[in-house]
Image (cartoon, rainbow, N blue to C red):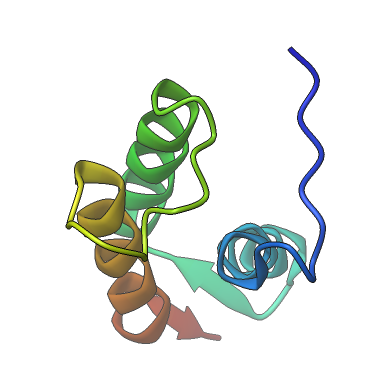
Length: 81
C-alpha cells in the first residue's frame, strides 16, 4: 500500500513527524524516554488504523489519544541544553 501524506491534507500528522524529527536533528533539544515512547505509540496506532487521517474527527480513537499524548510530550518532555 502506498501512502502519501500531504501537508494540506493532514497538517496535524505532519506536525507530529516534524516535532519528532526536529528533536532528533537538534544538538540542543533532548527528548525524554517518554517522548520517544509516545511517538512510537502514535506511529504504531496510526499505521494499524490503515493511516486513517480522521483520528481528530468524530469519535475518539486510540490514535486520537496517542496524538494528544504526544503533543503533550512535545511541550513537556523536550528539554533544551
